[in-house]
Length: 348
Ligand SMILES: NC(=O)c1ccc[n+]([C@@H]2O[C@H](COP(=O)([O-])OP(=O)(O)OC[C@H]3O[C@@H](n4cnc5c(N)ncnc54)[C@H](O)[C@@H]3O)[C@@H](O)[C@H]2O)c1
Image (tube, rainbow, N blue to C red; front, side, top):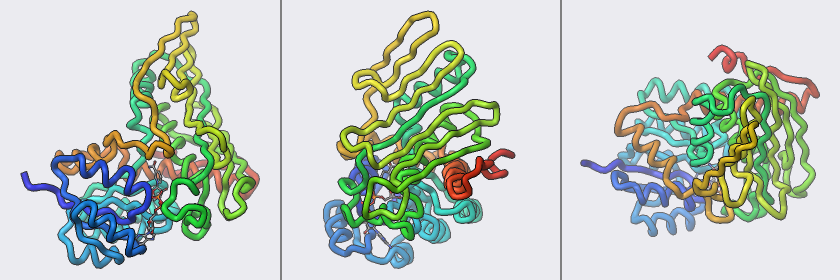
């Protein structure tokens, strides 16, 4: 079988730690070209993977015959780069948050539709084994009606992660558009939508820039979310959990409580109301400190969706719905009001 020719645009940390490693591990992929505006970074990456190096992504798309592209650049570039790649006839795996506005996200979805190409958003939390198992338990009715939840994603901030360290785009509003909420909170908005199997209707949020002197985006955010059926809970995201990362989620149901990534040994614990406790060892969620999720679930799913011509689990519409939760939280913070999540989400 002819290998898929893949390009990675942006050769920073997520490309280095996950996309490139996972593509390299996939037998049907050939890493053909890479691109970064920092020439040295592009060259070094190209050398490692025996690929061609570019500093201009439009040139890469024009010169190389590429089948699929990963967009691993700062948030403000996700929409223009994804649309250019889709229009050039490539399938696109775009990092999160999908875009900076709902309009941009819609334009990406439209470009995928018009070009008949796959568009997947890299919301990898859905593939974490404990999360996938929890979804199966919820679907099977194991915890009964869900009443509430609590989810958190926080660590000490992206300065130890980003290729540009403390000078990173992550702290710059023009390039990131949003801080910890967009970096970490959007992952949990997506995870909750997946676990609960329903959409959020209303949100209220408090957002602060209190921990990072170099940031003009949020570094601490706490919000309250309410679903269509009346499940309420909290989502916290932070770049100020300085001593230890917290990536936990708890679902409180009629028959049981599910604790995810809340215990160092057991990725999933189910506490039933009759006193029974079931502990699952499923392999812990990987943290940035360890170089991230190199379990290949995201890349393998993307490649499989191309080969089998299947819609990816997290397509453009899914990415947009998760983004819209975060956008509504921003709006709530700015207007000091409870906000409805986009009408389009509610009608889906
Ligand atoms: N799915 C996840 O768990 C996860 C984790 C971390 C980051 N991310 C996302 O991945 C994306 C990239 O983040 P990162 O952590 O790799 O950041 P990073 O700062 O480490 O790397 C970004 C790279 O993009 C390059 N770049 C900037 N402008 C460019 C341009 N015009 N053309 C080509 N390259 C350009 C930079 O030079 C840098 O090398 C972000 O959207 C981020 O939110 C996702």
